[in-house]
Image (cartoon, rainbow over all chains, first blue to last red; front, side, top):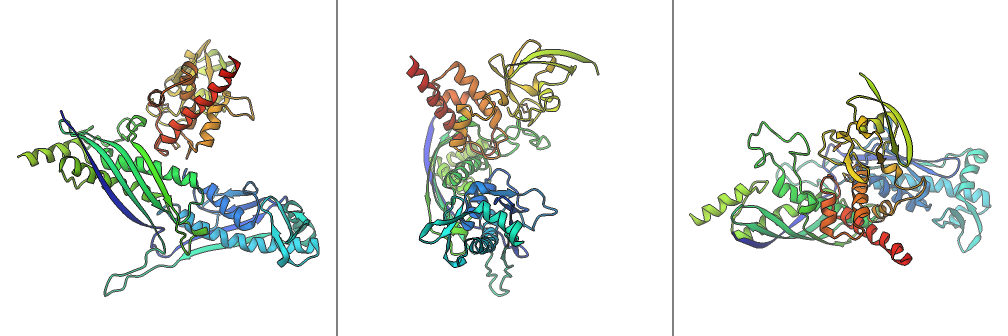
Length: 333
Length: 163
Ligand code: FES
Ligand code: FES
């Protein structure tokens, strides 16, 4: 038995969002009587962290603490429209919609504060900690709590805002097929190291080292989460996800966790990641989408590493032990 | 269906229940007692989301008959720390971003607690082994393993000081 090691790399340019029949998302924001800000969305958080990042974007734009923001994604029937959380579009599309809505709400908030403090709204700044004060004189200040109360009960004003971000549909040029499906692209490069068992055809991934250019990492720890979780899914796409060789009869497709095998905690390689930030001109605070691409570059990198290790070029996924062994046998024939 | 009485300790409290014969501890916890910290994933013993601690050992509550808990000591996620406080494992999971959708988290934390109770200074391999019956489809496991190792380190420190 021999184990051969190899190294491969792959790069990906990943569009943020999709060229649908136009790609819009909306957000509505309103203040409660006590100065919390409710962001109403139809977008869904399925664990990717949408609610956290949207709260950050809203709080930053309004100039209030993140704890004062409530993200309500309760109902896609009655909420403002969103195309959905897919195509790595959430942070970019919904984030931009929230910035627009929060700017409108902030203007009303400052107007009310200006009347309460008897100053010009243009002279006011938010401290990000729950208060608004006159630029240069922090003692002339009012809490956002009191601004919200005054808006509701004295001024009859709704501190609220509407936002939408629309990426219009791009039609291909008939002559060339050229089109503009997305406005910004994230980039990544992964280097994979593998060890191939030439007797069994099994592949072990030893390390995945990646560099990601994501525009701006609005929540660096969550970007790292996406990268590691995605790299793991990439290993799964590359090597595991099929009914074969575990279940030779295709009729016995995977129906549960016993059969739909993905790498377990014992199959993890060493991960190393670097995040590079080059803000996108139209991204919320410069952010691009980082979600799905994280599962992309590991796959060809692993395929290339296998080629480097044993000279076998497998061009269909997953790269099962059988395919590797057949390849090795063909080389030796 | 016949009902049978069971008396057991649940999160340090005496619990007396009438449960249907053949029903699972998982259904008793979630459907009768409203303790939703224990997650129901596959109902067939393959995901580990329903892990609880029975007499100090991790058990899959979906495969445990409620009536068999007579006289046992059952701990669920709710019993890990007093209300309003966090167990060091919970704190480490939060600090280490070890949850995404969070569905596997209760089972992971309880499996980890059983490990740390019997082995306060585990190696990475021992951690991997302890959670190998728990499936996570989000994190890629790495942050979970790191959080358990961090919690173990933190929990050892005060013990050393006392010694
Ligand atoms: S619900 Fe018990 S193991 Fe999945
Ligand atoms: S965090 Fe989603 S399954 Fe583990």
